[in-house]
Image 1 (cartoon, helix red, strand yellow):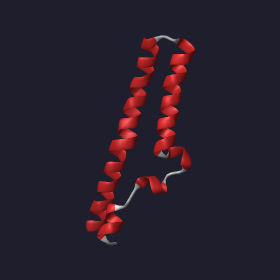
Image 2 (image 1 turned 90 degrees about the vertical axis):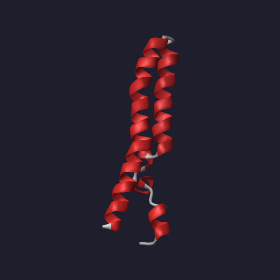
Image 3 (image 1 turned 90 degrees about the horizontal axis):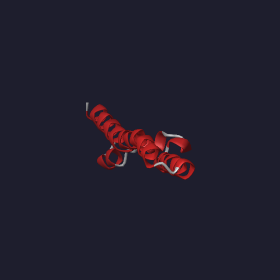
Length: 77
C-alpha cells in the first residue's frame, strides 16, 4: 500500500448510509430540535443534547481517528 492510500483511508467508506457523518448529525439535530419543538422546555432539551454531543464526539471524531491509527499500525507492522 502506498503512502497516498494510507493517507486517504477513511472508515466512512466501509459504513452503510445510515452510519455516515451526515446521517448521524441529521439524526442528532432532529432529535434535539424535535425535543425543543414538542416540549419548549430548555432543560429537557439540554439534558437530551448531552448524550447526543457525547455520541457525536466519540463516533465522528475519536472513533475514526482510532480506526485510522490502528489501520496505519497494522500496515506498518
